Image 1 (cartoon, rainbow, N blue to C red):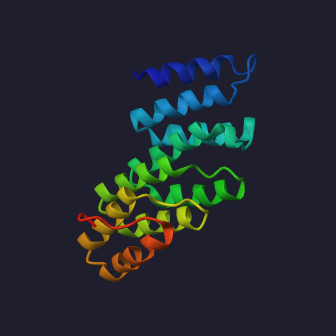
Image 2: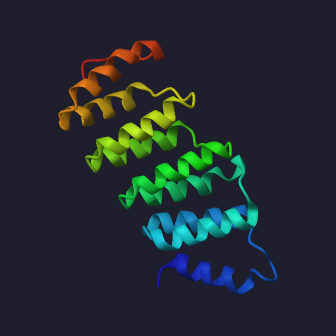
Length: 166
């Protein structure tokens, strides 16, 4: 029995008397993220949205949920949720995108990395040098040289300049 399961059972028992707040959901979602339990995270996330709605103040919960999906190779799902979150004005910040890119790089998943990149950059988030190097490296490993050159060319327009690693 994992600790998150015990906490979730407790919340389940008391939620009719004391409804869980956004912080309670965030703690549970962080637990499911650490344990890698996607099914429980999906259920918890759905309940959270129903009970407390959407708010940028709930970002830590959203990020935990998205991380759980991406770490479980469910980037398609994560991208769908990112589009919904954008529509609710709840898009995560650069730190989430940087971490997600690292995971996708480790999974050798250039298609989802490019989709994630597009969501990030079309919403005003400017990647840093480490992020550019990460995605360019991934694209080169996958022999997607045209995409790699395109990102290399756009770097200076975002105030980021290639280094020897790039």
